[in-house]
Length: 247
Image (cartoon, rainbow, N blue to C red; front, side, top):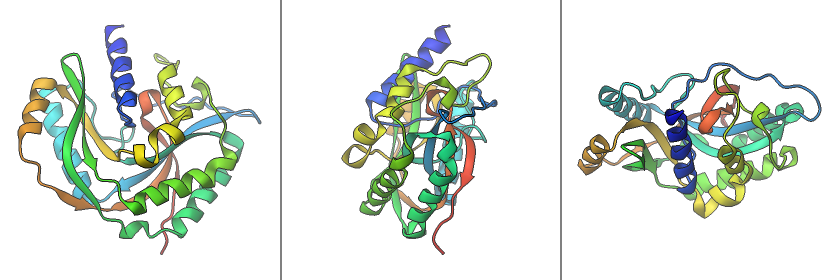
């Protein structure tokens, strides 16, 4: 129970900081939903190219070395940059995919150059959730605004635990996450958008040491885009659709 409370406190801190994060709950089972009233919590995200993946994976390995109980960057904890999160009608998912693909077809996403400029972490107790911050660009902000507008006809105000990927031992989604997804558009987009790639969890002492080291600023680009179903604590947990860039 103490671990559950610690994770919930960590997610609350992240939401307060305006960051969409990956947490370390073990997610592997999807709650299937059906019917006209079914809702799905989605994350439309960008998949980074080799320079960011290499840096994120190296940082994750470093953090897991000092904190083995942290999470690995794997199929249920994908390295990514969230662009938008929304509740949508499950029956309209195909329309959401089509709308997102239309936006991407009109956007030169592959030409985007993003600059990773520093480490960060959100503290909770003796540990912290770490990541790499990237600077928002006009092109990225325009993409976000266009995606929000494109999926707006298919969104609903809120959802419940059935909208998310859950596990048998953790079937109830934290209300903080539900509120976060519900209010993503006004509270986490535009000037409030903080693009980042989450890299892992470690003791604060180790993270302080890492943050004190020089950070070699580097550029990276999106290599792909996808729609994921969200899991507990904001995890990009289940890929629903690989999206297509403009050729």
